[in-house]
Length: 390
Image 1 (tube, rainbow, N blue to C red):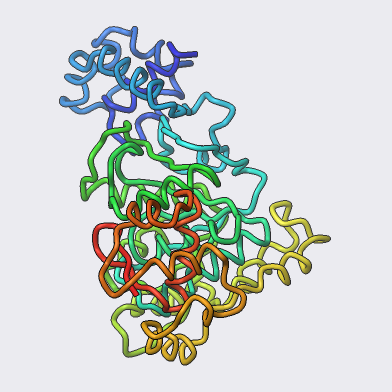
Image 2: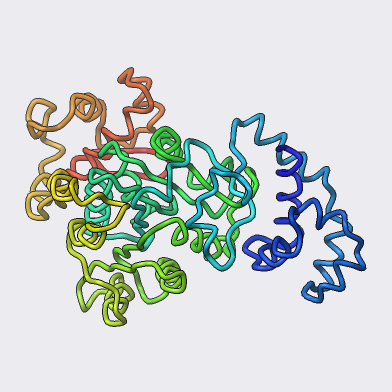
């Protein structure tokens, strides 16, 4: 099996990430190893490779690929190739499926579960973040898997909503899963590996390069039944995900926003172009009521269980105005004990999450959900460098 993995990694590197020629090669040759062992003359006769690709066939060594495998073994990452039974059939069906997926955590049964991507702008408004959180929480309560890209803004709110609801979420990265992309989101990514998985087609230590992210978006949409866009400007990368979803024959949903706001101009345009307007997760779930992904007999019960609502804006504003005066004993009655403990440990001076863990004695895995709960109530605010303050 390791030998097969070796040649799949080689093929992905020599042809490039996202190359549709990988599918062409595997139509002509039973395995990547068979292709590797052909002469350069035979490869040239196929007539579909560029000069740089032909050079790469001869120059890119298997030793480089073996070092990737060794690195993954040391880090306990899974390598899932197109030939692996774990590879989602749904993803195989796109035009240019990734030859190899690197995974930390447990990849859920994508093909037999409803999977919805929740995406949007990195510069989300508070209302947009609350909406993404509540959609993701509701979808996972109904049994769906929430997929997003791990960025700040809508992506992070989506992952946190799924985590807070105890659901499953996948984070598809545009860099290697071992790269410290957005260090402030490191605790969130750690939680995702326990309630889902981090996924990337790039080797573990690959840095984030701008061109990787649009390429990554085809995987987000390819894994899913549908994509919901929450807050996207006219040039938002999430619109690329929506376009790819349409090309792949997936459903596209969009949350309508203000007609005067630039942050929702792109998502509003999607609705004009035929995306289904949605205002709650029930609107999405109803689309799959009669499908195998969401069994009809459980549907209405699951929809009722998924009734996560965005917090009331007026109430949030009042809470933010008084948060500095509040004591743990005066917090909302339904707030968790962990959240109360953290609130008592915070002040107006930003505190690093590691310091909060040390000060409160709470396990790291319980700190992020509690901070998220406080943040959504407007009782704390995130600061740069994984710090929080009242």
